[in-house]
Length: 184
Image (cartoon, rainbow, N blue to C red; front, side):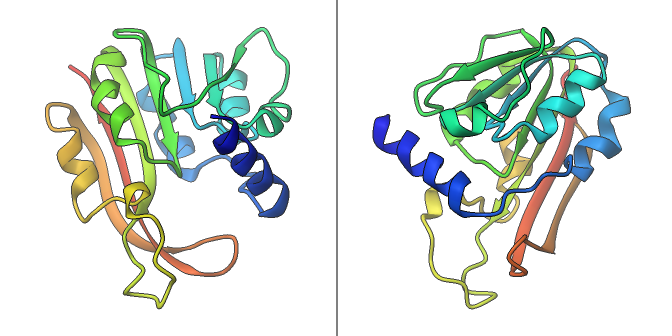
């Protein structure tokens, strides 16, 4: 865990991270009943802060204590310093699960159970694209395959799904999958 924590702390220090709220979250927030939310791999809190301002009680989870130090201290936010390779989601706890720019397949399998009835999942992350844009090969464990995100949440009512080409903060072309789904 210490090695992962150090690696993520360095990454936050050295690389630009998004500061604006996820457009997907902003666009679909009206589909969610205000209540308990979790921001998985919350980073410096861009989505956490937005949710707290909307009235959600937010569990902000990240392994980087440097990033969590940027998350505002608020009675609406519970900061959780945890290794997401070991952290478990509590079943039937969340009205909203937000997972942006992060993939941990172990948690994917827990997310459906962690949603309350009527709860919404907003999930967006990267798809394998190294061959498409002459990008260096990265660890494929952290990249989705085509349609994988959609297939991972069979059983939820899909509100929105898209796979598209986008541009990251470094100006590089990337592929992204986006899903908004609701538990019956």
